Length: 362
Image (cartoon, rainbow, N blue to C red; front, top):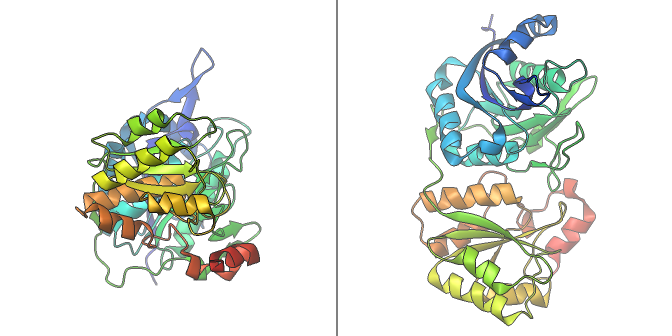
């Protein structure tokens, strides 16, 4: 008989394990999440895998998450990799998508699953999404650890690729979505996983290496009507190496604004990598569709296609960490490395006819 799976739970902080202060505000409290779990019989069910909870010190409200904390999460998983079959990262919702995207690049190769989850309401409250998110994550890891590999976000009965998730709602239990890639799994009466959307596990079972992120200087800038070019120039100024430019529609920006375009051109020539992503949740930034896109491309901007801002930032960090020169970074930003983007010639049927039509439009 095969041994029962063991799951490593990395509790980094967040709403799920918070307690209410006398003032009424929620805050992190050491030991509180484990005490709440132990008080609930559902976590002792026969189908719940064995798990150990590792509590970070200090516990964080995820608004305080930094690349140094990503490194701590990644190295903790690496250091316990051979002893466990799957890993659950309990995390605050505010920056969960950033952390999931970052660990997707930091940990490689992976032949085991790493799931992120959290909640909108603490586990200690009577009406909460915490128990469902936490318990179902454990059940998925316990049942599917042998086939599931890579980094994922599980929230509100949806299993999402870590490089595709983004927070879309601050007030709903449906806090996360994967706008440009189908959910890997859905949970109702049964757990349904589309295995065609799951990355193949690393062919050789070994402890993954960890790439630290944070040494590079990267930023994000959101285009808006009436912006002054000096705002962008300040973001593009040294020592910045890469910028995610959040543009309109299909990657459009005010190309009639000469100073704006000059700032992009000058920065690109200086070696700054500027990646165009789209502000709308759904869709892709394609610089070949419109004249404004052509102008951006001529200024050195590269398309990030359907990447989220979170994934694009993590990828810029990762590529610069490899020591690649700017031209190589520009090339690799447009290649799919961790499931983070869909190049126009690879749009899968699940993404619909409109996306496929635009992908083939030249």
